Length: 288
Image (cartoon, rainbow, N blue to C red):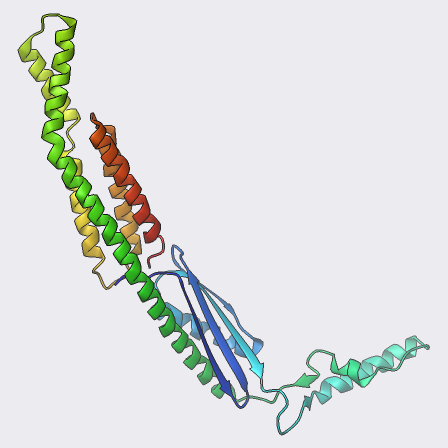
């Protein structure tokens, strides 16, 4: 099961006591990293939110933002923090004893003071239940989005694997011709020099050169890695790290193919393979 690490989800619920809005954003990351922006009323539930995310997600940088908008004015009207008002009044009286010339504090100025106006008290259990419903809904939405994007990434990777397999097949088919052309080229050069040479020694040197430029092993490993990636793409577990490792191995074999090349066709094949590998690697960086 291929899932992307990039996704966004949003859920909202409106209740008699106010509105809760929860947003989840995730991007690619080496490990699972979570960060939270919560109102004061919901900070005690950060640990539980983290547990829920860790149960469903394996990798990615996940940002969770929760907004709480109290219902405000209701049938009971605005609620004033009487204790805080009295404390402000006593503070003003103390200041007035020092500064004889003073201006009276207006009611509107008092109302602007933080926490003077209070929202109606909400049952903590009811608030927690609403939050848990929101996060579960958002997580399911995020998983669905990750899955949809993961399916697209899988198809992109499979398309490039098909192209790589075709390149490997073509190189394997022309290897006998390349070896023969290389032999004829060396022989022609010796003949142009018009010098006598030991035919048996020449054949021995050709065998040594053939061993140095032999890429059958690299082609076999490329084929094996391509087959393994197809198998991994069918897995139901997170496969991002495994795919990243296989990309390194593919790139290693493509580089060796280029370093052993004695023909423009194998050189071009090496370059084309590395281009395809890099394209897959870029997609793999976003897979969970």
